[in-house]
Image (cartoon, rainbow, N blue to C red; front, top):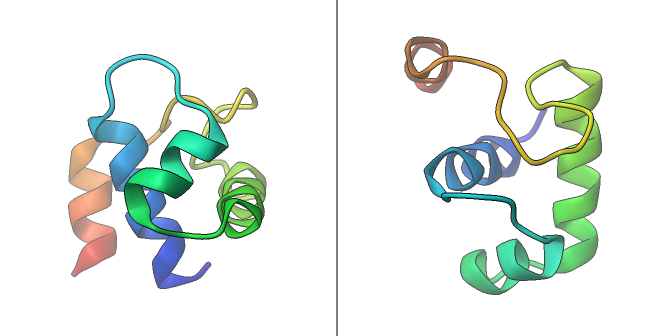
Length: 67
């Protein structure tokens, strides 16, 4: 995982409802391809569901990961 993956996971956790890669890219000022690569890494790690719309881990885990 990269630090960028954590930023993207946190953004998805904060967003209400489904989001598209383009919306995430615009909001975070990141290339849409990087969003896609990040979501694939997170899905492989089991941190995001298969639709890549919902973070699976709880906030305690995210806080632990950030420390």
